[in-house]
Amino acid sequence: MKNPPGAMAVLLAALGAGPAHGQTPAAPQTDESSLKRLSIEELSRINVTSTMKYAEPVREAAAAIQVISGDDIRRAGITTLPEALRLATGVQVARFDGRTWAISARGFNISTANKLVVMIDGRSVYTPLFSGVFWDVQDVVLADVDRIEVIRGPGATLWGANAVNGVINVVTRPAAETEGTLVQVDGGTELGQAAVRHGIRMGAGGAARVYGKFRYRDSQRFETGASARDPLRFGQAGFRLETGLSGRTLFTLQGDAYKGKLGIADRPDSDVAGGNLLARVSHTRSSGSQVQFQAYYDGTYRKVPRQFSEHRDTLDLEAQYRTVWKARHDIVSGLGFQVTHGRAAPSQVLFFAPETRTSPLTNLFVQDDIALAPGRVHLIIGTKVEHNDYTGMEYQPSARLRWTTGEQTIWGAVSRAVRMPTRFDTDLRFTGPAPFVVLRGDPAFHSESVVATELGYRRAVSPRLSVDLASFVNVYDDLRTQEPSPPAGLPIVLSNELNARTAGIEATAAYQAAARVQLHAGYTLLSERFRLDPGSFDLTNGTSEYNDPRHQVWLRAFTDLPASMEGDAVFRYVGSLPHPPVPAYAELTLRLGWRSGPVDLSIVGDNLLHDHHPEFGDLNPREEYRRSAFGQLTWRF
Image 1 (cartoon, rainbow, N blue to C red):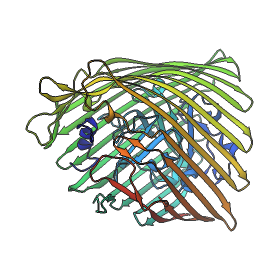
Image 2: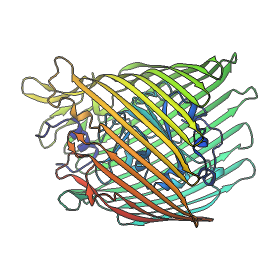
Image 3: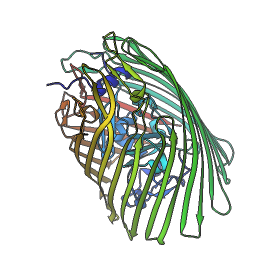
Image 4: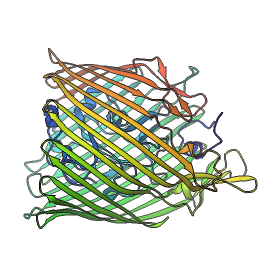
């Protein structure tokens, strides 16, 4: 029996997801050719910036963090950023249709998932419209990705509201490491894309690059066999400029612009367009303290015929300072201001009241890494204070304890985070085919919150084997519900009458089986319990807020073969989804590659275990994803 119409269906309709039925400079990273040869032990020493807002080795991080390297992406046959996140333990990734992805961490996965902060080179890409990400317009030249840092668990003390269940930070390579010309062409049964990038050095202290990229993905198929008529056509270009590489002050300027069309089965194509510009200057004083200023502008446009259109402009300013005090205190602090202005035109099925809204957000944070026993035991405490125009002041503290001895780290954390309201929670007015409002937001909607308790263990068992374990218990309150209005039940009003408890175990291991063979594996166990508050009359029982597998498994094998050949395999198992039901499935990707000097050739087979299978969604009929193959040529000169 189908659930009653819920907020998920409304959000999908409004966003056009289906038919109508900050980054701190890190220590220099290894270049692409060297990263390929890193051992398991060396991989554990890669520096990350998302856990502390400054560089630290991943093996010492007091958080559940995993790094997806640029070489992991290349050898796994990845063509989009959402696909790359399948390589992370504890992250739920599912395709809803030909362009929409449901992506979350530690539960709460829906096509409009809203509890992750996602960044590309320090610029937040989640939209304040609904606190989620339009994944169809997030793109980079994948050969220029240095790493993707994936944190599971709250990161709000540093990254602010909506970093409830995790933080994803896509870090591209500095322009100084992308000198020369790169041409990359992919083509196969479902996709075609091409990218050109050119980088130059400007003396000893500067570098720059420019790029252009076009991608096309063919229409998917409904379970009936009929075409979903949802092809994706998307073009993007951008640049990055760096100066001061040989001094104490580093300046970075970068930007992107894009335009695309997204197909929909029963109407004209959706139009998307946008652009961004980011400037960052960081200075290291002779004392070792560091100061950084960052500013970016992001403008977006999205139009879904007969459903939804929005123009949005966002300006974000941030200052950050780091210093060491009395040898034992490593303090990082900062303040920021963001203002976003959205204008949503009314459509046949919904409107926003008011039609335009300007939302300021101010914040202040401080975090202190206290060396209780230098080199071994550290206490990391901090908080972020934010003021928004929906709920006023929000506090998001955390405390983390890390004990490092030899090649092992034990850590624990307690933290609080919130998802602040959005226009979909407060301003939405949905009519559908009716001449009156059947669902509306509530200006009194308040922030959803979580208190998370985590415990982790990370160890390099030997130079050839490493393991990483994490467990968590999260307690959520004030989650979104859909409350009928008496006496007739309409309109349904969005409210905060749901609570939840989730718990889980995440295990990741890496093994150097031989000099030329690396094996990686991950397993996730997730338990979820949702309950309505007394007095709630939500007929969906909260099921429109989550649809997650209990078990997930992934395995990767990367093998260097003779004659400059590479043989790679990625296996993944995803447990069944409860509502709407989606059967469990297993899939396999195989890649055969050849590298010789500046040329890299690959042949990739994807979804090889089934002719077609569904991954997510409640459309009727539902889209399914087919076995496919493609080739890739990368040429550097």
